[in-house]
Length: 463
Ligand code: SAH
Ligand code: SF4
Ligand code: F3S
Image (tube, rainbow, N blue to C red; front, side, top):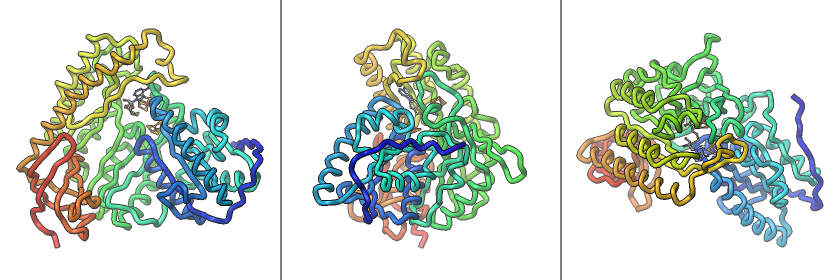
């Protein structure tokens, strides 16, 4: 496919020898992963990271388009970016501004029109071309847009750096989506479903464990639809990939997200029973409880299907922590249909959940449906739903008080002498421990719990 970089002339010159970048990431874990790859790319071409926008020669926003609020954040941030760029200009310094991610993909031209401060607009499939686009913007004195879906695999061209990493990491194994839920922009911003080959993923995970990573979360918009090429030339399932990766000795924990109920296959459910490295946590969005709404969403599962999967997974792994995504106020949702959502929540008992008011997204089928639910009704339903979910989360967390759990120590806490780690159930655990223990899995007796986190005492010192 030919490179289609469109150039639009701009007046000012921006030749600058200095090289620092500031990056801000919005949206899902896939954007967090992409930002890490962008950092690796920039460090290869001589950029160093700064946490101060005003100091940066390159300001990059990695954006999210999932709901209107997420997309609007970008434009307000671009207001601040413009101020920073102008202030730098007064000091004789040039600044390149890049908008990446899903807003870039969905509204590239609109961004350049609304925000002339932007020099480069780059969609998620083109990150391996970032150096070339920056070069063009800098030397040809123009705005540059690349939102094609190139034929080449960006993963093969993106570096996996040698920068230090923490004890946990994300690894994108699957990207894009072919499911076209009627509310969702992802199939348009991330393109067709694509799975990376097993060998490529294993190499990346080994490079992470060599740098001290103990836990990886395998990412995909539909991660359990993973069907990448295995070393034997056949398509491997996610369960098979997980089993393969669990042979890496230094890798202690494996997670995956986000899954779709339709792809919750028996081998993946069995892996939760059989593979001790696979953590007892599953994020499985159900979106709505009423079958009429699920059909209008094009989810292709009923609430009964969902509850049956939950039964199977609980039979395989009784202590599993369940998480979900829920939308309230999808067009036409009645009070009775909303109550069906509450019923599913009561039936499942979630350990945690994300819930949202339906947000009409341009270009998606649901946005043009009549019967949009009024904003105050959505707000009231969301409040009711969230108080139920909060109570369930608190109950789940409180049930761990008195138990001793293995906790992977991830980062320093807010207080001096405190570290924060994660339980197998993905709960944040605060405890007193030495910074030298970061990256270790330690036994912690849980002494207190809130809806958001646990507190505990270190039981044995592995040193
Ligand atoms: N692939 C995942 C979801 C990815 S998007 C899945 O199939 O479940 C993350 C979540 O954002 C979705 O699960 C959904 O709950 C929410 N979401 C997506 N589009 C939305 C919209 N238009 N309005 C409100 N919430 C939305
Ligand atoms: Fe969006 Fe549906 Fe695809 Fe999930 S499965 S990314 S909600 S279209
Ligand atoms: Fe947002 Fe794109 Fe992720 S729209 S949720 S950043 S896939």
